[in-house]
Length: 391
Image 1 (cartoon, helix red, strand yellow):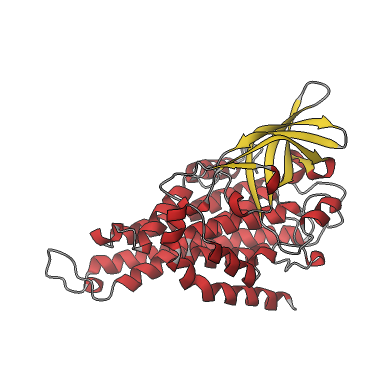
Image 2 (cartoon, rainbow, N blue to C red):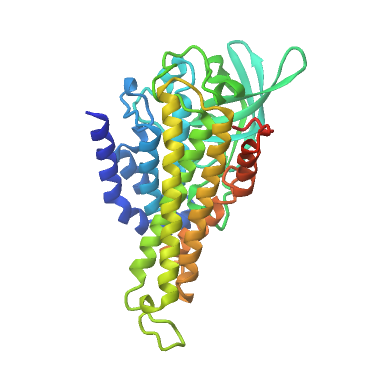
């Protein structure tokens, strides 16, 4: 199947289930985890194969193609979109591991991997590998994952410390039922814990290596078109969630509008009011501006991957700034539409309020915070050093 056909097949399937994802929104929130039906439909659509390398039976979609699919899912359910983003970007991260690890992880051709980037664990060398201990909060998607990435600290023989990324079967970790939140409720981002978990050496890579796709013992290096910078790749897929949520909120607002008046006024048709017209236009323009901006970073990242190069630090900093700015535009668009929806929008049965709460919560994520990202972008634009290793 040609690359375009692979994308079209997944996109068409996902678009067809958007109404079901929306219908399941309240159930997802009540159970604090996305329904099994959502996962089964996404599996059937091929979503969990889209980042798997073709040599393992995967679809091997490009970053831009994955972003389109993620946006469509978020258009139906923000939390399902967020979890899909985590699973998809983590599956891609697994392609940076040694071939031996990839063969184990991708054995079935479809896989879901959750991840926790905060280095709140430790690894200690032992025969054949390491012993992993620690706990990781906000582990989105862990409840439905097959594998999990954990960040951990290691002490070197000279007494210095470093950070490693460890991939372990989800069955080796315990999950604490502590995800009680007001936004992103259905992401099931609970705390996971490892106690003396043995990890083979080929499941551990250094933070420095994985950040720039410089890991060894793997055959898929060079100009494969898929060796993106890790954080830039994650940021691009994260922004896709925001764009999908904003598009979904826009559609939901327009669906509720027919027949609505403006309470305690003589306006019997809200869409005839000039303020509503301005609000809709402003929201639409913010969404379109964010979408247009996304094409710039996707083109930069793909061009570098096609050439077998990593993005420059300046390009990575700009990607962070632009993705953060696009997320902010999307959030502002949803806020406008929510505030134009009247008091009835606060009912839990109204999907728009869930889109509003979820995007507010996701915007608080450290990687999405606009001020942090814009500061970083501004530094490099002014000729200063990025002053961070998170590029």
